[in-house]
Image 1 (cartoon, rainbow, N blue to C red):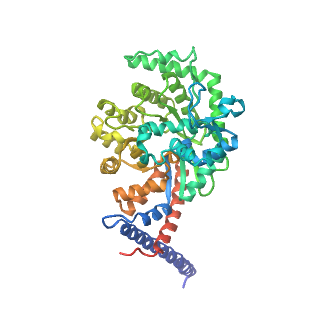
Image 2: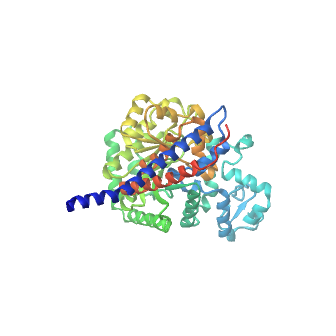
Image 3: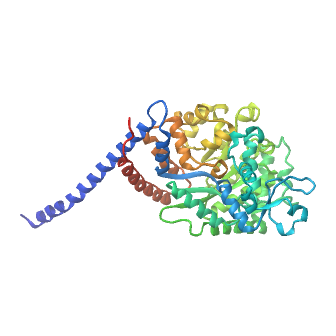
Length: 502
């Protein structure tokens, strides 16, 4: 045998065990996937799904990302009370207009209280010692037990958004500590990546040389007038030293908050955001600082707009807000947009209020993702809009728990199957898990029990949450590689479980 033939034979012999090992690994993974699919299918079979077993399945299931996540609404009340205790704050037991106090509100300056206020402001230890007051506080600072005493509470949407006014005073206690707390909770349910909204972009209010440019626009302003006002406002903000310093300070807060959070099994990024229920000049300044922040730090991967979409200002200025996004997108085309849009139902606003919000977010603002998207069936030319969302694509962030609570939309009334039928990508997310007292595992469980997808579809949703994240391509690939490993481990584990009795 010639020397080169000997070398070829030797190399083939050495390669055979490796190839066999790879084949065996692939065969084992296929078997584990099949066993996991069969196990999951069995849990869904019958007139009533096996919810207890499915809960275990959902908790163990690897989740790629939570892409619609509000930091302050993610912290549970019990943790906020721990922080209030550490800060030495107290909480008012009563409302008294004369004293200017409201029951369940936090007093952040107890050392400066009058004797009258001290008499009705409970320390956190006193709050916890009074079981009746404590339990009622939980129902004011979150949606806990709402259905058990619905007639004693405000309407669901107001109840939900009012909670932020209670715990807001302690939400910035220690961002780094809080994010590590959220990380630990995420890892406990096998979640690898999170995009959260920590703080809104800094804004300017009542600045004589700036505010009138947008605030004095007439309701019937022409496109040219709007464009001129946006250009002048943009130039002012770009050249204003105070605004530029506020952006630097904003980024420093995020950098400090993120210290030590990322590791080999978890990654965190931020979305800057603006509130939609302020004067036009305030919204635009906050939007400008958010866009700039997203161009200056890899930690800030996109921009959002938040707040009750049915608010008077939000409805009145919706089209103007979309034009603001479009204008800034032209200045900063690399910035990604995930926008709350269509978080409305018939009756919450007049019918015409349901016809254009998702469309304008997509076609005017240039949204990459839509948060909620509930009113899609009421949009003008909805079929054409769905086709456009599929083609671009524009991903919908589906929040089953908050949609059911705030809007009363669930089961077959929810448009998630409508999006799926039209090929529009969607992902599952939590929204405000502290307020809703849920987590991402619960969202997967709800999706599974309500709509009964097969296991392959459930797995795809986990991968899609990474694919439609705003991470750069290299980090996205890292997350997918991690997810591959985690799913291989999960499926091997499920394949080894005892089968449920038939």
